Image 1 (tube, one colour):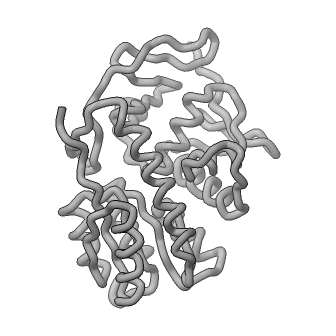
Image 2: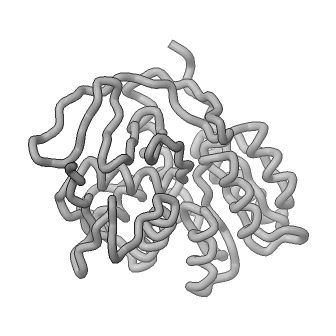
Image 3: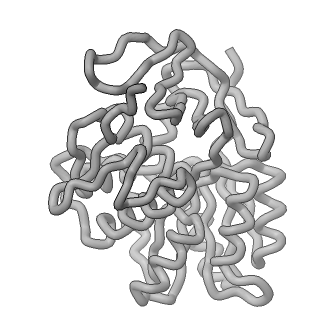
Amino acid sequence: MQQAPERTAVIVDDDADVRNLLAAILQQAGFTCIITSNGPDGIEAIREHHPILTTLDVSMPGIDGFEVVRRIRSFSTTYVIMVSARDEEIDTLMGLDAGADDYLTKPFRPRELRARIEAVLRRFHQYEKPYEVSYSSSASGVATRAPVALATGGSPGSGLDETSDGWLDHNGLRIHPEMWQCELDGRPIDLTRSEFELLLALVEGRRRVISKKELALRLRGGPTGEYALDADRRAVEVHLANLRRKLSDPVNSPRFIETVRGVGYRLTHSLRT
């Protein structure tokens, strides 16, 4: 069995004091840190080192963090936490909409960042432990995991088909939990880690309604009894909006994700011909 990928993080921030603080926190969590002070260098570091986690400032000279994360998403699924002094709600929504997984405002408490890092690691280990891990590049350059077969079977009437090679199928949408791959009508769809997590939760839930709180806690990697902040719920809304856009899945006539107003979300009925 190959060794698991090195736990690497990339820090992109033009403030030396913040860079040093972030590096200290990440190193305590067991990361090897690649430190950069501007967007272009950060993009190249991510391309070269394939980090699990990236912290990214918003206000930097040259290209800002919003543009940096858009460019990152063209080739990487690294988990991006934007760390910024811009604390307006619109800034958070812009960051998430650009492709970030989380948004943390400065000044921040190191304990809060460590909690978010632990959530990332819980999610990473959830997929790392059951099978051999090896990373390769898909046609789009996004890292994927080596295939391992899943148990087959599916509940009758669920509208979800499970194939012998581990793919879950629904209305032309195919998702593989272990390979971290998604296809729509035979075409690969590049999703961020958060978008993939949300889609997988809905697909696995079939017709069960899943609340925003439950989805938020799944993204955080915490137990179901934890408290979900309003910001966590808004993050779910933004990630789902991005996911729907990528799947060309309109809210008023959904093919995949159905909104149950005031409750949450669930998978749509299967389309039978």
